[in-house]
Length: 148
Ligand SMILES: C[S@@+](CC[C@H](N)C(=O)[O-])C[C@H]1O[C@@H](n2cnc3c(N)ncnc32)[C@H](O)[C@@H]1O
Image (cartoon, rainbow, N blue to C red):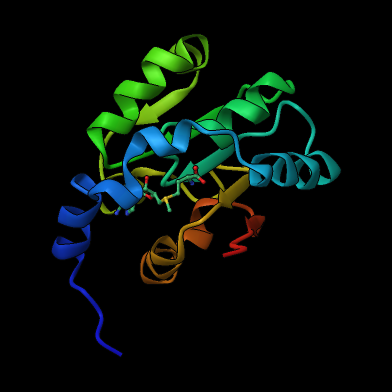
């Protein structure tokens, strides 16, 4: 398999072109509802939850609207984070958002920093998870629900 380098992946996601334009991620997705239902089964509303590759934050926002406010998002794309601040202003002010790469941010977290880490639509991020040993950043609680 021909793997892209981390630098190439960063460049791609910073300027992803039309097929992954951040504006597309403003559209509500059924996955956000699936995510909420999973999370709601396993975590109290005060759980500390992180979404790597959150884009404009539509999944986080669905959790936020349903009472989960101890949220962290990491997103490399600047336009996506700008759109989050415009469209989900209240959430963006009240949660922790890092407009940086996972490689930059994840090593700064302590072991068991999060109760839950959720991945949605991030096959590439999945490989980051393994590469970075993300398990050490949470209490073995991860929900991965790629359904493409
Ligand atoms: C397929 S999108 C999924 C977006 C979001 N999870 C959703 O379901 O709406 C993958 C996201 O991961 C982000 N991403 C990919 N690699 C990243 C990295 N190394 N650091 C931070 N964000 C990254 C991309 O910019 C993109 O927003």
